[in-house]
Length: 88
Image (tube, rainbow, N blue to C red; front, side, top):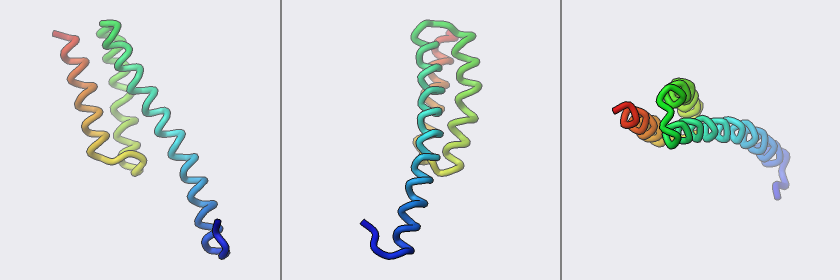
């Protein structure tokens, strides 16, 4: 446990940031899940709409540093590939 005022403040800030990032991370996972569910159901229109909502959100999370940029890029690429494979 932190003993100095500065360390206590840093711990408080860490907890606040952690809670903020948790919200974005779980929302991002929900977007990804919606795309994967639509692909599994072979619903092309629903998959495209879900992808259109998911990509900007994933990119925004990467820009904020909530997820690493390469992980975000990889996730977007895999989702796009799945939706395009469904279209064929």
